[in-house]
Length: 108
Image (tube, rainbow, N blue to C red; front, side):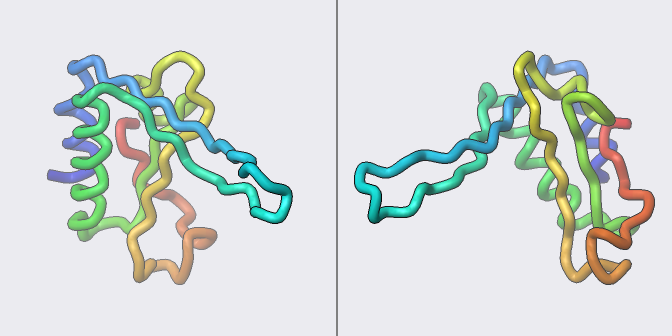
């Protein structure tokens, strides 16, 4: 399936992702803080994200897709979500992500 087809399949299933960048301070000042991307969702939401990754990995027509709570694919995010998902397959057919002028916006 293409990334857009994955979005179509999961669109009606009540998928609700929440992504957050979080830094955890460690116990001693000598240790560096650790940064994480927190991905939260029910089993169906996590399956959607997994299938979207697989679809982008095998999609021959474009190297980049993205969904965002305030943009394309907003239906896949719950309240409080502030981070989106940008999937960029390498090697990039445009050189790098900055040169991907019109990425494939999944769920648009």
